[in-house]
Structure formats: C-alpha cells, structure tokens
Length: 135
View 1 (cartoon, one colour):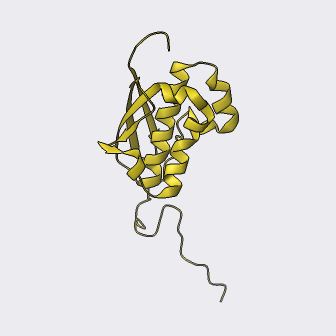
View 2 (view 1 turned 180 degrees about the vertical axis):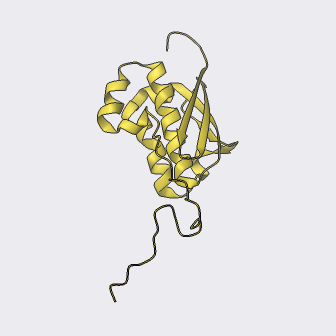
View 3 (view 1 turned 90 degrees about the vertical axis):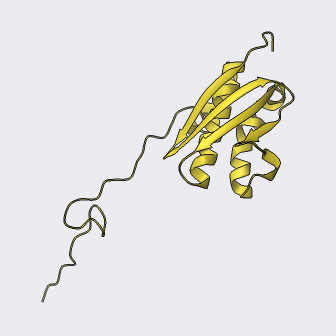
C-alpha cells in the first residue's frame, strides 16, 4: 500500500448493518470488540473468510475493525463479508472483477425484503387464503 490511509465501508444484508474501519496492519480482524478466531458458527466464519481468500496477500496489509448490528447471525456474516470486500476493492481496484465473478453479492447489497402482511389475516401471512372446499 503506497498511502497509509484509513478505509471506511458499510455492508448490508436484510436488517444487518456492518460498519468497517480498515487500517494498515497485519490482517487482524475484530468483530464487535472480539477476535475473529472466537467467531461462531463455523459456516458463518467461512463465508466471512471468502473475500480474504480471494484477495490473497492483499488482505494481510490491513487490520479490520468491524461493528455489526441488527439481523441474525447469517445476515450479519453476509454484511461483514460485503464490508470487507468493499474495503479490499478500495485498496486494490483489480479485485473488483474477481469478486464479481465469484459472487455478485460481495459488492452489491441484496435489496430483497419480506412482504408485509395484509389486513384481516395478519397472523397467517401476506398471501394466505382459506382452503377451498369443493363439497
């Protein structure tokens, strides 16, 4: 890295928002003040590591400090991986094509949301109807 600068990015997925601050360092990751080594579940940890593996040695040039709020475990891990990918692209623009070829949601937020429930059947769901009886 030629300039010693701080990178700030945001990743979003469902209701989860991850705010990332990247500083020049050795590749250390801190999530909500805790070390990444203690992060669980294992599958969510693997998904967070994907952009780091794709970036290779470039990922070792930064220390990532992440604050994530809202959503569930997998929504948060998707928001974190997106924030990390955005920071790595800001560091090295050539990674953008690699990330897009691997997974489109690494750099672009998934805007899908649940459909609001409709009146008079709010418990059952937005499109639930009474079962039809032929006789």
